[in-house]
Image 1 (cartoon, one colour):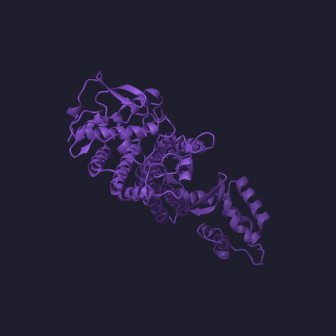
Image 2: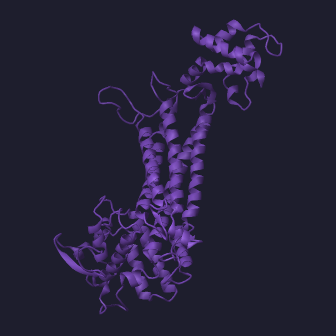
Image 3: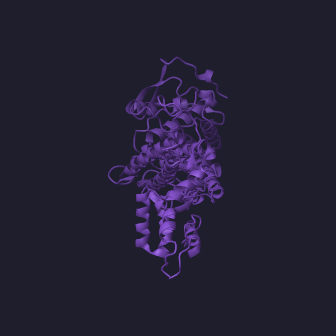
Length: 507
């Protein structure tokens, strides 16, 4: 096993590697080669390399390709095993070589097909094989090198066998996004849903005032409001399942433009099956390689679903911070957990910081989606027989999925679990609401109910108080005498939260 000491050099030391464009100085202890170094020099833009998830997805893919090429008799066992072992080291994060970051330095904003990253992976795999066989880094292209039972592993001829950047990068994108969504985001949203659903059940007997247009409306149960939030998250999970269905189509096997030149006709199907076995995601070969490589509609769709989930979370978080506003001069129907002081100047102030953080995440996800959408637009990213905005699209979708995963967990753990209702506040606000007059419409009509509400507001009385004073003893629309008990029955807030509710007397 190679250790870090095997690669120890000073930063100024370099080695010379060659590619089809000629010699290139490369850091002596870097596992990459000339093609990667050219990309490092060409694209010093964001300082943000292609996400680790893409690199690890590439390692899964390259191992699967080596396995299939071996099984098809195209790659000798020794070469295939060496590639697979190197890919495992990459999946583990290259801890013996200072981590992934220093060996996969290519910027997100690079060649739009991800060619630089594909070659970066090919070179690192080949050099890991060199080290494993006690050969110098960069000797993978030496025609005179013969390792134990095999010649060296060439980055293009062997690691990239039957592949192109044009089908491997979009495949790595799909692997990274689908595994992240299935194994991380969906479980986080499920936990969030379960917590919201638990509150919905526990608080179903708490009646509060409803609000539409930020104005008082008819009563609603707190549990009903939270059941709506839980349903939003459940629908979000369903949307992600649909995203997984489209992302599970892998472009691998199409090579340069989707025709499958230089690869075996069964390659795509077999690689997809191998990747599925490694990841637990139901991957399959793309039905149409020309759609899968010439456009990135599946990624645009997945991003749109992530955006929709962000919109849902923003609504839930914003509602909760509004309902918890106060504590004395706001709505105050919810009591948010105090997690940190809210002001450097106002003592005792506590702010809804968790909700604010979640909403900022939602803003970022919506912005990411705009970039992904543009990356798929014809004439911008999708040009004739290839999409050329893939690294940017991949980075944004993975960022969105990561942010939503973490935001859902923080929202659940740091806010929802400690959230409490203020039942007394809910009850007092209902009684003072002018919207209570809605339940009197069946007995005195719309116009008289509206007049009663306006007069109650003018006199500073509740609807119930003024109804006692003005309509007890009068006739209702059916000709019956209105009693105080009938008014109480019609103004029972609980019955107003039931389907068809007109107060218990009208039910």
